[in-house]
Image (cartoon, rainbow, N blue to C red; front, top):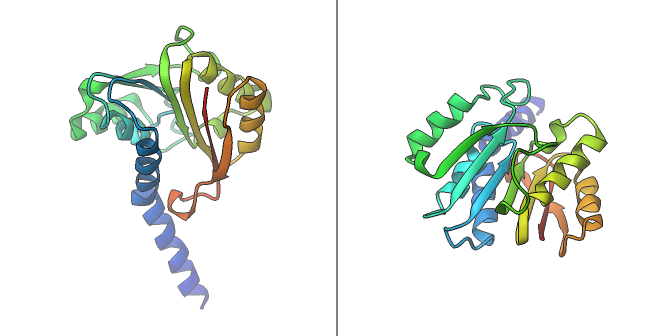
Length: 190
């Protein structure tokens, strides 16, 4: 019985890691109803799963992936790996990659229509740092823009930060088993 449960758990993990999270993010991005002209920022883009999900829906817009590119946050995490993934998907012409810290974004105020982040904010080691990252995401968001944060930890903390900054319609909900985490996401228009 223990072996069967372990096999089920391993199978669920593999599905979530290889396919499920992509299904979840595809649905989430579809719900943003993008026109294709948006400027989108992915905080902690890693190897680009969410970045490329967004880029597929852009025609004249750009998807910018920001990361510190630390392998300790995600195995194989590098700008070169993300670029290879974009090239393989035929999306390299729709993305830009930036090395930077989400707590001090190297972008002007009101630069993006949408800000997304998937399972990256919890890598910021302190509560103050995570608050700074969420606040920076809001700073670079244009009026009327939207922010979508998914994480395994600290989502209530993000929601409080968003509400205190004046974000409207902040919602926190479970991501579901397909995402590979029991985490939750925050979605709100700004």
